[in-house]
Every structure is written in C-alpha cells, then in structure tokens.
Length: 112
Length: 114
Picture 1 (spheres, one colour):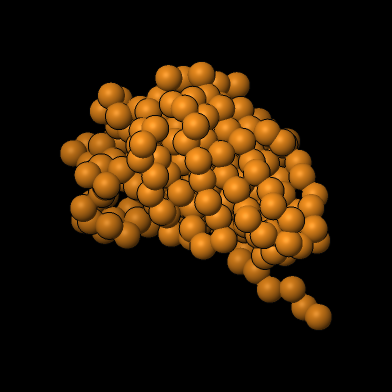
Picture 2: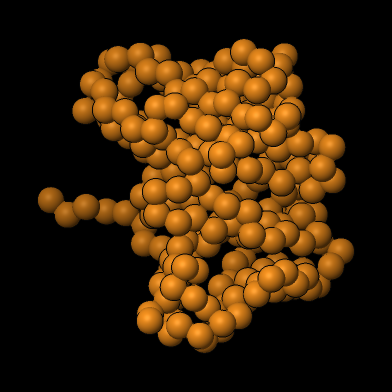
C-alpha cells in the first residue's frame, strides 16, 4: 500500500547565496521565539532567538525577523554553506507556561 | 550537545516490552523535557518537569511515564511498547534563571518497536 506522511517544505539554494526560511506562528501571546537547526541523526541545535518586543535580531551570518502583525517569523542565512544543510524549526514560547511549540520545519539543501 | 546525554542511542524492541530511556545533564538546569519526533513532523512534548518534585503531562503522554530521579536525571518509560511508538525521542533541558528559558536538546534515541 501507499505510505502516507507529511512532507516538509523544502528550500534548495546554491552555495554562497542567501537563504530565507519562513515560519508562521499561532499564538499572538507568545513572547519569545527560537530558531533551531537539526542535522540528520542529531538533536535540534539552538541558532538564534528573538523576543516579541523586537523586530529584528542579528547573529553570526543569521538574522531573524519578526512580524507580529501577521504572526510571521523568518530566518535569513547569509552566504549559505553546505554545512547549513539541515531541517530548520521555528518555535514559540508563551513564557508564563514555558511550553515550547514547534513549527513543522523546513528542509534546507545547499548545492555546491 | 555533550551537556545533555541520552542512553541508549538506538533500541529495537518487541511489542509489549517495557522500555526505559534515560537522560542526564550536566548543565545544572532545573527543567527537563521529553519529546518524540516522527518522520516529517516537528517535535511533540510527552512530559516535562520543572524540578525534582514536579511532573507534568505534555500533549501526548498516553502510553508513557517518567521519573525525575535527581535534578540531573529524567527517564522516560514505555510500560508496554507498541509499534506506533516507533520514533526518535529527544530529551531537553532549560534553566528558569535564563530569562529566555531556551531549551537545549540531547542527541536523541532512535526507538523501533516491532
């Protein structure tokens, strides 16, 4: 029989290009957002976070943008490298409950 | 993350068997969590513990139990394993004193129930 499962959104980029990964979140009361990177066979790794009172935060080669009006989060990776190939998850926290809610993830593939 | 370890890393078992997955952390964090991840899906929370005497159910706790033996140890048990519990299991920790309460994950345990 046919197997049924969910398929992750995918993004394929050339090495050296910039990547933008998007995420829609659900809880307008969430006050903190995190991006995680998960490589094959490994646990999710923290990349960058942003509080709800901010619109933008920059890290090393990564930038997170938050648009609370439309409940949208994005992760920008500059000069994408093969080592950036992974699944990227956004997560939201409503801190009074301290419960992390994960998005479905995006598979990023970097072509040499 | 070497600060959060999980044992075993891989386990194959049969339906009806009792299985325990263990998690240890050296981060000194108060809070610990167990998640499962199925292919193509995000992580779903099974149980969490905010300190040694605190245990809370997550969104998918049926068929699972946990024990917080110490601040550094949090184990997940499957009392009678069934095939749809085949998944990747992740332990995570966080620290209430960190204003953001970011969770840090272990390397995962791949469990297969035949």
